[in-house]
Length: 103
Image (cartoon, rainbow, N blue to C red; front, side, top):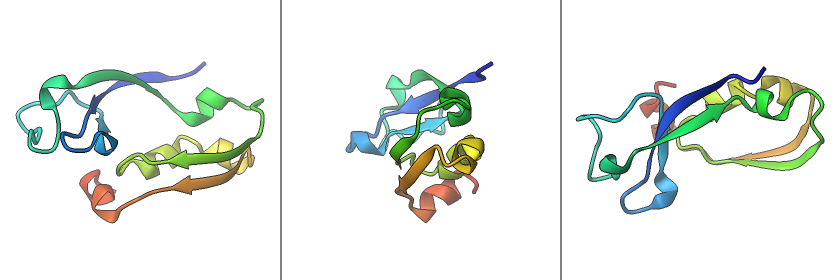
């Protein structure tokens, strides 16, 4: 069955597109200059392989903009990518975000 977990989403203070998802509830370490730390939202997360499944219809294009979690998303989509269910993948990434996520 599908493995679902929970994480926390923080909305960017000056740019909602700069929102991030983290695995732990934000605490004192949260940078309130960058994020609305007091409005962290609990969200459900699941691997793309589990969401799409083995019998998925082909996807022409998938866009990924996940603020430093690109490698985690790719790891959770290995079977989908190997099977070429997603025909084209467009991703935005910025090395400082990867470093901040420990990648």
